[in-house]
Amino acid sequence: METINKPEMAQLTTGESFKIFQVRGMASMGMPLHHSTGEAIVIVLEGSAVLKIEEKEHLLQEGGAFIIPAKQNHSLRLNTRFKALVVMSRESNIEFVN
Image (cartoon, rainbow, N blue to C red; front, side):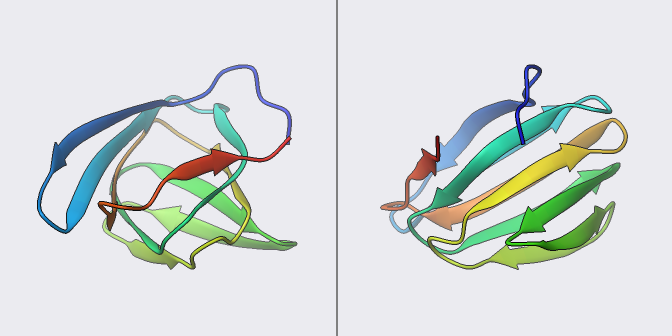
């Protein structure tokens, strides 16, 4: 998925074991193919988006949560105004795929 307008991703806090990011964006924004080196938990606070892992699409909706397996390439397309928290291990990193 080639994307020009990416949602904003900001690290909110880091503890001894975990870090938390906030992802925010508007409809039609998207994150290109990437993965986390560790498991990541997505908690949707507002809106909806489609998380594509391999060839399977998962609808993320307000009030829902989803666990993304470690090193699993995925992309994200926002359907509406969107806000989510992403929780991952402090040692995990996000790596984009060309």
